[in-house]
Image 1: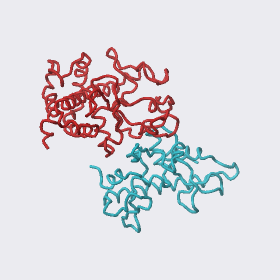
Image 2: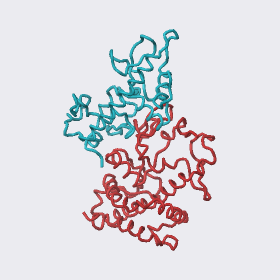
Image 3: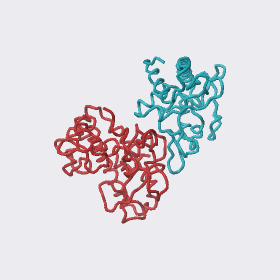
Image 4: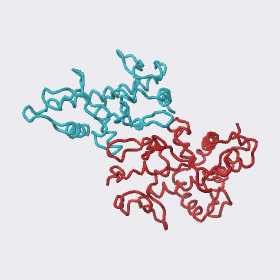
Length: 188
Length: 250
């Protein structure tokens, strides 16, 4: 049976959540790329980060921090590239069950260990904790946190191994390394 | 071997109008939790076909169901409404698990007992290896599509018959009612079609062969070679017949 939160989300017409910056993990990107047969840089981009995120990666020593985010569809006002829209304006996610963990969990969040609903990216409704699916959402958030933590650890390995003297690495090199690292096969 | 569709730029998802069966509409609508009217269009046909239905107030017109296209009606480039521009120019399907049968079997067809590449498709000539379509999954999907199309043909026949016989009710029998009829019908037929895999594998080739001879066990007599599934065909037939006799019992 489809969960209550999922039904409410599917019914949402505009999906303004899909216009926000969607930060993803290497594992998210790898799952999508494996399923769709596309390259990581087709679905993810290096997004300039505020100082200090645990998953901020650099492309050169001391260079600007970036985070991995889903790409936007060109000319679509910031809509996620995976968002399709039928002609009456109703939008849905083309990834479905394959969508990133952060999308699957939205709008559930933990605040000091308490399950809450954060609908700051929504215009469709003010989500309440009663819209969530309790234990299922707690489990989803715990899995997401573990994956984000693992992603941050991989990014730290990448940053630590950036060569001082050989200059800049490209985003594609980062992606290729990250995909191998997610498969457990990469050495920086 | 990688799928040739992954990097193809011949734009089948832009060029073709994708035909839908009633079961396609039901699967997509229930899978996405959307109303069929949001993604289905009725395409006027030049002449009557097995799958053409009529609508109230247009007695001389025949329509088939198709997936809607994105963009402006008069645009030259209108991709499928569910197409996603991801990666290479080929893009990706945004409803892959629910995509219509026509997309699932494209570009294959059954010819002389063998699954082969259709001659009339826009795939690059060397995109598919000759033996690709010998994989059992292609034949299974194709036969499933053919059998399911026969069920849809029954649905169309029942609808057109009702429209013809009920002039008083005909005003309300537009596309939204046709789609509501299909949704209600398939809600009841779907469990009947959910045969065990081995049973489908036994039934589908015999059913499809009978269809290829121009006959249908749902629209005519059940022949000896299909008699072991007689109850199966009758249950589908009676379910479809109940649509207008008793409103599916509602």
